Image (cartoon, rainbow, N blue to C red; front, side, top):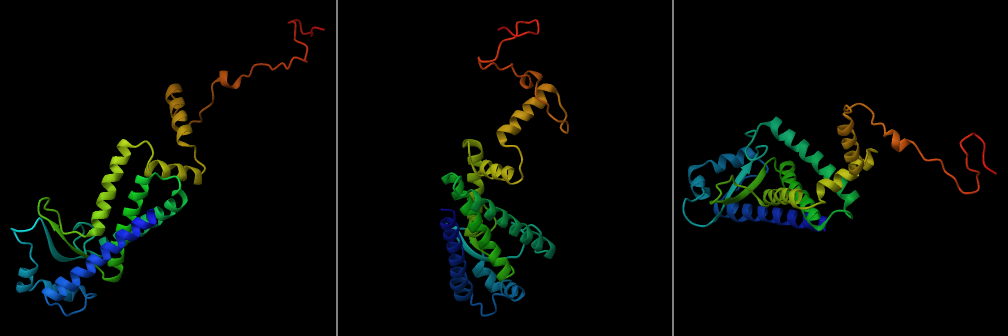
Length: 243
């Protein structure tokens, strides 16, 4: 299910980007340069007549298609700075590797909603990461008037939906992505389970034990009652066993 959702998101994202470039940028606007040359593309899009045809109209449809070559880090953050883009690429790559690693190890334990969340995150992240690696920028084309949000794409939508579902799951579901991944993390690093960690936390609070002090079980738990199997003579109290 995770792989299927990720592939579906990635396919829709790349097909929509290809379509907007071919039909709008090349077809309607008449761009004939290289799509891999951001400076040339930016220069073309900045021409007055092109800007007029590519501008977002004030009136009209609820959703507007307007092509944008976004080389900023995230939602315009970083303003195209090289360090911001490199940092985003590195963080995205690390995030994807960790997500794929834990998903492979825990896919049988994840609930259906969690699998959907992971699939959306993987598909959306790969979609934008592919753009940045291949083109040097992200192809954005969707603008929704009622929310007045920056121009985005299907990959962005998938990531936002996944985050919304993740918040819903965290508040209204007992077991989700966070819990399953945390259990796997504790298992890999030989840490106490969540139940054991909660018990130790209660012991520390009860006995006012510091964070770095060892929790010692109560004496009552350590003391065991003498065991008699019925064949051993019982002690009469004077040190001698009854016959």
